[in-house]
Image 1 (cartoon, rainbow, N blue to C red):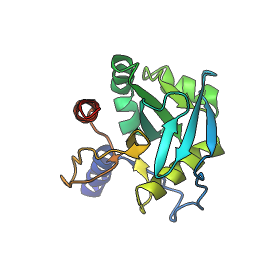
Image 2 (tube, helix red, strand yellow; image 1 turned 180 degrees about the vertical axis):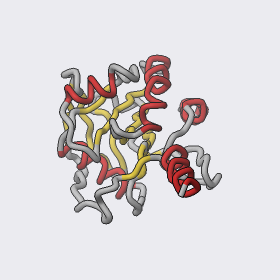
Image 3 (cartoon, rainbow, N blue to C red; image 1 turned 135 degrees about the horizontal axis):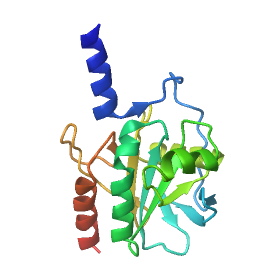
Image 4 (tube, rainbow, N blue to C red; image 1 turned 45 degrees about the horizontal axis):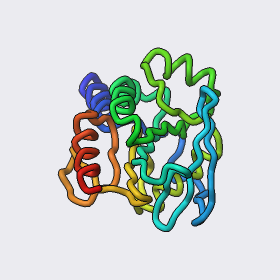
Length: 199
């Protein structure tokens, strides 16, 4: 029994968190090309994103790199990486937009602030929990042809409306368009530098 407990703990820590209550993917709710979606952060700031062919851009800042981070306040790897993500956002303030999307839980902005933002120094743009988060997550997973349940944290990087290839630390595969589970921001930063060099 102790052996099974150790394996389950390791799977959650290294592989990320999963939605324990869902065995099937939720119904799709993707955005259509040309749709705009305005997100409001837990602190009241607003950002607008536009659906383009094959991807998403930030309306008015189309040149910015976007990192969408699908996370949960209950997710241990999400908590662990939050302070480093904050540092990454500050370092590349004029070049990237980091957006946290709470997706698998029904919590309000006060709960997110008190249980995630404050204790883990996650003061980047975290969208209020809403159907808009689901619409973005569904659009992202369809775009990159990701057909499994999302394991948290789950991130994608977009530049000029195109999903970028990122480093796959788990299987070392080429052409991977997402980060899954806990990943060091040193890996993300290395990928960001490569993306910025191709401008």
